[in-house]
Length: 219
Image (cartoon, rainbow, N blue to C red):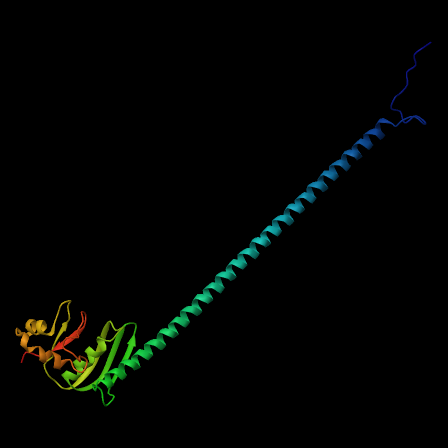
């Protein structure tokens, strides 16, 4: 018996195994294939993540666009309501302007139609020409005491200048007698106040707090 040495890596023996170079080449190829598969997997994962982010971005843009459109529609609706409300208010104010003018004419204070009245947001604007101070003051009181009027802005010209009357705002508990006593120092002069406010007043006892009355000049 004996021991014989052979060159192990001289090449593949016929019909027996593979050489070391071949095995290393196959291992390298397998490693390359594995690495390529992992790179492909990472690339596909990155693409999937990118597609997901793009889908989320598109969904976010769509939601933002929808929200913006909803805001625009709500704004347009509010604007339409404001326009409608403004138109309604202008119509009502125009209507009240004509009603105030008709009321003044019905009282016999503007037979010639020389007085123009415009009503705007609680303020009555009066312009025109009247024959005397009494008519001017009665028009102001008639309009100012009308429902819905909080202020009178007047530019009424008077043909004949006369002393102005004292304007008195009725307080709770006031009577014409008490007002005459306060203004003239004589309550018995209350009929003068009553007559000075006709035809707006029809009964000396029918006055109310907040109503403005004209008291003729002391002279």
